[in-house]
Amino acid sequence: MTTAQSPSSAPQTCPVQGSPISTDTPQVCLRSRKFAADPHSGYRQMRQQHGSLVPMELAPNVPATLVIGYRTALRILNDPDHFPADPRTWQKSIPDDSPIKPMLEWHPNALRNTGDAHARYRETYTAAIDGIDLHALHSTVEKIAIPLINSFCQDGSADLVSQYAFPLVFEALNQMVGCSAELGRRVATGMAALFDTVEAARGMQMLSEALMELIQLRRAEPADDVTSRLAHHPANLDDTEMLSQLISFYGAGIEPQQNLITNTLLLMLTDHRFGGDVLGGSLSTRDALDEVLFNDPPLANFCATYPRQPILIDNTWLPAHQPVLISLAGCNNDPEIRGGDRTGNRSHLAWSTGPHACPAKSVAYLIVQEAIDQLLDALPELRLAVPPDQLVWRPGPFHRAMTELPVVFPESPPLHIIEGAAGRSTHR
Image (tube, rainbow, N blue to C red; front, top):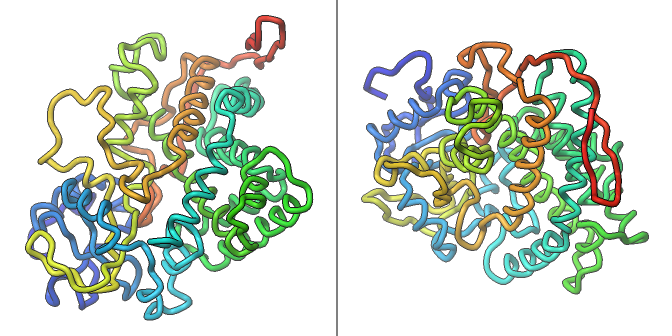
């Protein structure tokens, strides 16, 4: 790039030629720690230099286009005929050892297909999710949250990423899927490697082996869980198709929900609007969630599509079969649609939109909000252990995630859940 950039926050450029927009324009990299520390400055500079479409490098020698214009994103996400999600033509040119390939390659699931195949997988996937009892899920999250809080409440300090958000989310997913704790640990490790694009192939192998064991179990012994509903749906998914649906379910659950919990807690602990007697401020947890989904969505850049043919959009030609990623964070913060009080406004793209919009939005909202409320009810004097500018954000092209969220609080006795005729209550 030709303009000056702040060394602390600007996106780096990659010395790779072949930009999807201009053959002589350097491609932006989103994988550096500098960009992760302050992505919004990076998006602003991208917008100044490139407008709504930014030439980027997903991985070494893998060019793509990043969409940072809200209206442009809506056009693309609602036009699967011109922007299908099927990457099979693209991936033929991607080396097997590319760190990005396991994350974006084709699978027989709704996320990576279009047309009739997409409709079949989407119907099956949605039916499995719609069978989740949201009322019972409240109790499930509480049963998971209380022991986790008890494991650190007497210490006076904790890392809310590793000690709370991550184990809570993956145990909630395990229970919805019908997965044992041992299989769940293998799933979580594999999924983390995929999102970090570090040892991604090994992560996919670990993930697949664990979930295939679960599939065989639930084919033989069905229960009231997502895996069983997938296995016994009239669409008759085979084992490979089953595996892909479950990978998609975990992929949409572990990393994004963990990040949404911690990013929302960070906002609530650092913004006076949510202050008072923690959090007796004027705004609710749901308001904080929606603000984070606007400003720092847990999946910052995703929703890959692949134009069937060269296409002109926003006065820019996009080449055929090259990834077009939607910057959910960049689009949500597009100056053309920002402005005014957005409390209660849920027009953000954090859940995507169009035929590939997230079908588990209600489930995710419930888990994340319940997890936050349980923690803040138990430890109302929670505060950050370090200044916010000392928090470290994980680099990577897809997520918006902290490495840890250290907090301190007065040492507190363990919580106990009491069952009674009036329902469940929590006491110390």
